[in-house]
Length: 199
Image (tube, rainbow, N blue to C red):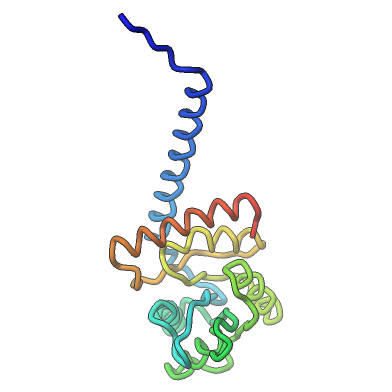
């Protein structure tokens, strides 16, 4: 009878790969589940994380975030809105400015809208929004973004010392299985990047 003994190094490699795959799948599951829960609490402001703009208009993804923030405002969950996001393409206005104009058209009071127009990443969105919030004595926040973005965004916000809570959009443009899996894969990767480098 042939008795093949698996080399110890190969067993260690298989164990490490298995542990890595388990960690990745577990984290992806937590990201997915976290995005399906929200906090119906009152806060000083909704921080709307930036997304692409199309000319002078918000992209469909950004529009869903803005609409959700406006609903929070009109239903009394937040007193103010903070729009984040700088210039994507050189010929387009800053994402935050497009968000502000959209909210103004929906009868949000100009005095209840704040913006930061320099950020290009989620971490910058939140860091710059916090500086704006400090200027206006705002201390409690609902973070508004797509469901699969929420776990990393709230983790970042709390890492900055913010009293931050998840408020995912009830609708999302990432509806197909393919688009959701692509978004989930990207978020899982960047979640691990943040855990390692805090960026």
